Length: 445
Image (cartoon, rainbow, N blue to C red):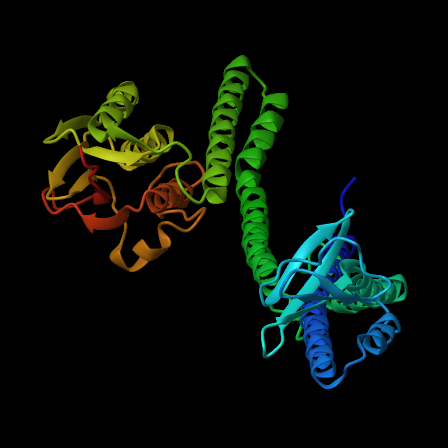
């Protein structure tokens, strides 16, 4: 069962107040006991002084003894220098009250604790000893302690109610904050802006606003992706439907076979398009490579070039690879393979028969450079900023499919995830075509 924040705060505050009250009562008790001791010691000293004065001025010790008997809680013994008892009070014990030295001392007689003050007269012939039982001091201290604890019976419940109400009042802004979040529509992702949000809740509000912003971006990606995908899939699906209708109406086997081949080709293009869309959806949602590791870019490129060799041969394109460095970088091998495959596939696809595609890996200082150079139609400089737009189609390429933009938008996204740069230039060596450069930061070996 989840604990309640209100109950937790109430318990902490109530226990803290109770412990503080008990601690205050305890230290007050100790302080009161000390003050009581000082006060009663002073009373004993004053009593001894008065008795000494009476003894000096009176020749009737019996009268003094009668006065001491009437002094409740105090016992008296008066001793001569020779050790004989001159007089005592009726409540005094038979044993001697302490020693003959001046001052205070604590003694135990017949299991009763006494506080005794001893004083000699000026002549040094008579020793007055005045004492009292410690029970009086204990009783006074306990009485003070009880009076300190008595309010607990009434104050603690009252304080508990006040603390409960105060905690509830303090949590009102949090409850309002909760209602605001709970009542929001799923598509309402604008930032929360509650003017009375407590400072302690501001980090939560900021975190939720950051989450709403990320969700807004994600939803925008999803909406744009869905709209673009639906737009792009219409072309291959319409072509497949057209060829299917042609196949139904084919007057001879040759036309039927041709139409069926076109259906198969269109289906392959649609499948490839869907694969690329899935890749785009994946890289769109990522913020960084999932499994970054040190890898040799030259090995990734070599594998991708080898996989496109047969396609290039069939089309009559000279596909080559040159590695001046192993190109050790930090990244995700799968994503980098997709990046290289898209660049090589586009270069081969848009380069006419008899053309040339060169893939190069080199290193300069702390950067690894991947270049794909072709002799195709290239991309006009004025539209290169649009080349990475999703589903951008180059004009005059003569190629069917989903367009250059889908492939290059995937390349751009993967490059961004790896902190790499993407640049388009003319193929200055051949005087025609395109050179795509992707610059990575070299990994420290």
